[in-house]
Length: 403
Image (cartoon, rainbow, N blue to C red; front, side, top):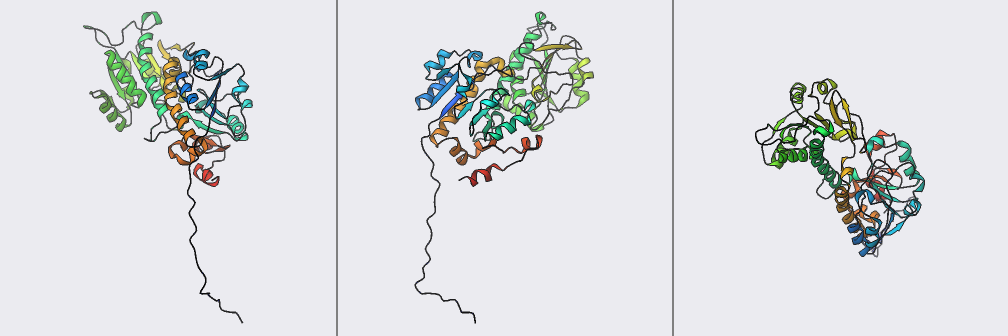
């Protein structure tokens, strides 16, 4: 016969204390900056001024000799800022945090240490599955410049590089329109009594906006195409002047390209390749000596005739049209670009140290999590996992499981 449960009068139920998550304070960072040897990279991710701030806050920075020369920063500039200068790349890669202005390349993969943190660009078009697998094997935590997001929801490094590229394309266009460069021999913008040059900009994002702003400042006649009406309205509002705009309708675009001196491709794509909106037939109908600058070449380009070029050999001629298709335009203005990147990364590193290190900061800062595409060897970016057929792991669950 089953006995009935007995409830004692002396039984008491006490609430358990809740354990609050307390931030760890004061982590010291050891940061390595190697010299870039690929992707025509001239930028450096931290300037001497930024290094000095980090060193004065108790952190260590080791830099490979010559790392800043492309941006006109000497070893002496960094040494005076408090950085340690070394001739050995392998010594730089012993630092727990590696900060790069170009993606990790094949020669650097063997130098990586287990559980290291890398902050660098990704460059999806040249990314390889074997590289990701090598990072995963060493349980690397990797942040991508392209994915780093701030508290306002914007991508600060991408925006800065887009602003530089947009402003630079008009300066480049003006150069290649000159007779000495084989162009039409016209001055971008024109003068009194001479009609202004006609500029077509395809894409109304940040690159398109700054290209438009620079072209207008030089006195050119500008027409902007984009299929996103919101972007076109935003461009008008940001500029504060009325600009000729249109959706990308092939017949209208082809008609405008026939009479322009400069055509800029500035279409962006969230995932994958940029759409081709200008056919070879449209390019062939353009005026000889005109200039095409395809800023979106790093994602395939939006002109059918575009082919990747280099800073050393930036142009080629096709259908008598000058094509400028360098994928990393900001690297051609390396000092300005280095300051822009450094302005984002230095405060981020300082904030992470105050919060107990990058691992602690990832736990508390939801915006920063968006910048991660790999955490402790696990692929945490869904698009990258699909593109390369790698196992995807939800970052939020992964971080929570380690607390």
